[in-house]
Length: 271
Ligand SMILES: Cc1cc2nc3c(=O)[nH]c(=O)nc-3n(C[C@H](O)[C@H](O)[C@H](O)COP(=O)(O)OP(=O)(O)OC[C@H]3O[C@@H](n4cnc5c(N)ncnc54)[C@H](O)[C@@H]3O)c2cc1C
Ligand code: FES
Figure 1 (cartoon, rainbow, N blue to C red):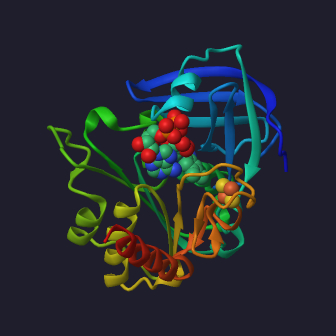
Figure 2: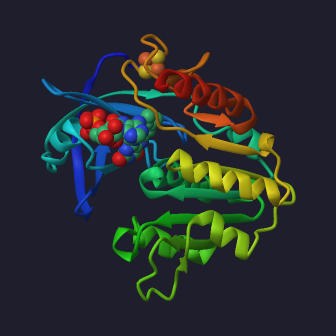
């Protein structure tokens, strides 16, 4: 594991929309699907970003413009140097997914770690059963990685859920859990893995529970505020677990009681 930021060359930058860019960086760091890096902007700060591909010679970062660090990152172009440390975290439990049917769910830039898992599945297709994928975006303008999604539609059962359909005939209107409720996926011998806003993951999890999938068959990839990213500073703590070191992917029955305790203590603090 790398604790100090190292310089890497940016190989390619693609503007996806006014809020999101895809950065390709040459590197042999070879992260596991679901692991993440800290991007370092000298004099400004650092922020965690997932790897959104599974390739031993490059890292792809699907980055949403959020604040200071991502604003500085957005100024960089092909050929510029970026400092990175990592990879961090445990990533997805690949061994436990073998021979299972999978339901993958991504909301917004939560697509990044899910994409690295989809790449891994494509490279090891015979190790998995049926693959069902749901993507949640605001409206057609916010659909990310359209070319990749077009390719995945040929291989897997893909549903794009839009808050506002705006005439797009290839997508479904509604939040992911609403679309799932209307046309429930088969959940036999299935594991569900998701990344997106916690409120989305909570609603989807409740729907999957109703469809017979128990909490021990559901995994959340969590995005919390971080500093060190290797279990030292405590910034990402949820009760007794470090999101950076013990996650960012958690089996839901492990993280659920901790999230519930966190919610209770937050309510007490605000009263
Ligand atoms: C493990 C992990 C993987 C991530 N992967 C990606 C990724 O692949 N692509 C991507 O675009 N973003 C990802 N994020 C979120 C990203 O780290 C934040 O958007 C980032 O910290 C923004 O840094 P900033 O300095 O530009 O903005 P800040 O000034 O730090 O924040 C700007 C705004 O975003 C909010 N924010 C910051 N961090 C988070 C967070 N973790 N969760 C929710 N809200 C937050 C702040 O409250 C604020 O409103 C990931 C986060 C984690 C923990
Ligand atoms: S970010 Fe420092 S302990 Fe997780």
